[in-house]
Image 1 (cartoon, helix red, strand yellow):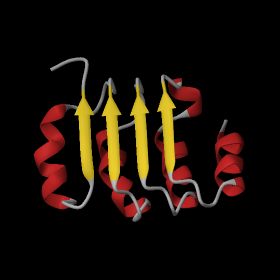
Image 2 (cartoon, helix red, strand yellow; image 1 turned 90 degrees about the vertical axis):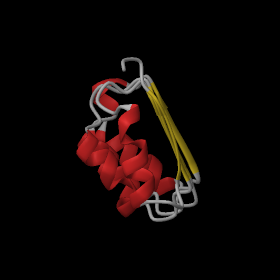
Image 3 (cartoon, one colour; image 1 turned 60 degrees about the horizontal axis):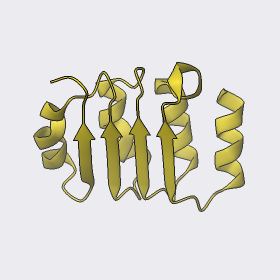
Image 4 (cartoon, one colour; image 1 turned 60 degrees about the vertical axis):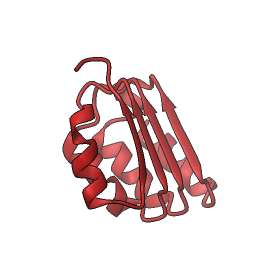
Length: 104
């Protein structure tokens, strides 16, 4: 899975929107997400739905890894909750953030 994601990003250097839907831990985890964001330097929108593996620590690193990002949408990700929205927006006011968690 690591090689697959890396190859997709290398083949699509102008990729602007990337969406992971219920991708599970083998395809999308903290390490893969960090590598992916560094390689997709033109990424403007990132959507992650149904991930159990992305940590809050890595989530907060996303803007630094992908400086072109304008929007992040997180839905149903077990480890990222709505209560982070205000802190994130204070740190990164130019990025639109949508978070919807299954549990409150």
